Amino acid sequence: SQQGEEDPQALSIQEGENATMNCSYKTSINNLQWYRQNSGRGLVHLILIRSNEREKHSGRLRVTLDTSKKSSSLLITASRAADTASYFCATDLWETSGSRLTFGEGTQLTVNP
Amino acid sequence: KAGVTQTPRYLIKTRGQQVTLSCSPISGHRSVSWYQQTPGQGLQFLFEYFSETQRNKGNFPGRFSGRQFSNSRSEMNVSTLELGDSALYLCASSLFGTGGPYEQYFGPGTRLTVT
View 1 (cartoon, rainbow over the protein chains, first blue to last red):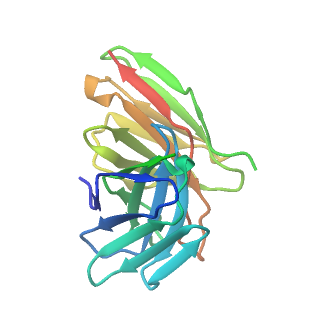
View 2: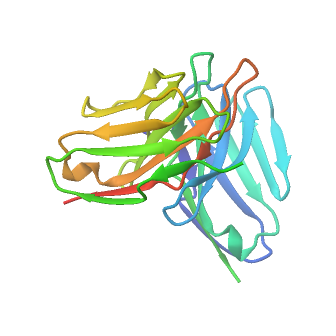
């Protein structure tokens, strides 16, 4: 079963606009990661944020994490048509015994040129 | 560095058959994980291997098995295939050490169709 729920399930915006996707999860985590997937292909890692971090940036991406609300958001600024993809959040209970990602259902982002 | 490679990329099998999928991790990565992606269930964790040992296992029946070789390459086997096993099977590799956690790097996947 999926731990996370993502909101919205689908998002359509114009090029240049910002896109915000939200993710909620149910249990305590060690870290949360965001991935992008283009049309049924492999996943591309975007950002990893640890449970003791509140915000992280990478280029046009900004991720926030609120462990008290068990939620995270991904903001893509100045979107481009090439950002069209499915975006997944994944929680990780990483311990010395290894990693095991639990994925949300994903948000399908469409950026119209 | 070369990315994670998976072979074959596409596979069509018949119910009752078995299948073996292969994954070569990024050089230097010792952890390999497998995930199944279907439209109905989404992305689900199958298992993770490190130094030839299975460390974590998801909630899949015993028909799903795997192994890892000394060079970190991994194989996944599904026996007695069912229609519901049709999916995109993704392999991911990761560094692993005391300084973790580490992001996972995914391969392009193997698209398995069971008829």
